[in-house]
Image (cartoon, rainbow, N blue to C red; front, side, top):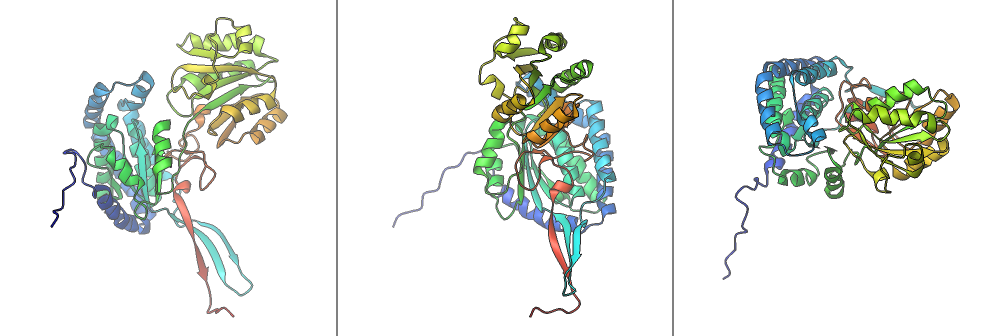
Length: 427
């Protein structure tokens, strides 16, 4: 009789049921969380903020180990790095989420039927969220806060680059839950950063209700391609700022400088500058000088190079590149429609901005883009949940269903219908 042959496994491979075990625990904990009072969830967030502040020295030491081991680009190093101000911002973010209205139980609509039935649509938690992110430690705190407040359990799978930092943040979140008498399994992280955990999360249909990836294009594309669970995501932040012929020139210079260089490594950073042909000779040299003196480099089309000859020539691929660095693609366009055509061709449906004093031109631009967020006379770097008044965000969504733009508390709920009768039966 044949004998069964054991399948060899890697010595460092995770247990195949790690994510399943965590998800089952998360679902049970989430049921408790969803039925908890607003005050209880707020108490958990406030206690977590206190725990985060109390663990600042431990967190900064852990983060220093992460940064010391990091070998990536400077822009990504900045996203990974914590300092006292960023730790305090995380703690304040938790407190701000606690101060926001509770979305759970909100009556979205209600109406009466001719037979006397009263029907209402009520916001409810999604259930169990799987958050897959890369090197920004604050994402773990923001995601956990939004999930707790919206009644969702969450499994946080951060990247290996930020694992030491993530563990300290996770401990603070669980301390907050424990202080409020809520199950600590409402917020969990895998025991290590093995990539096999990602595959397990993507295949956890029926256990995880929604996957939210936050990171580079390759991560998001993998998640979207392999997930057996609904995904809320954006693949790239290829954002544009268009300086229209009727722009206030000083305003344009302030906005462009901020939109590109405030934090060039975030998804809301402008990657392409479009300048209207009518004012390009007047404003483009100044815009380039502003950016160049602060370390920005460029890739420019032929019309821009006619005005500033020293600019390097752009290739077709440059305009389709999310730089996430102090690099800017520059193009000159003839009017709003040509700007819209350029964005439609190269953009990623994330965030676009127009700078103009012409309301009609702005309206055409606002209505003509197919992006999740479109702005008038503002920096694209405002595409951020905190700046929208959401307290924080768990990511940016550029799809067509459920949510678009910054994903905050409201976007982490679904709904149920409640039907209230007085003894009606259907004929």
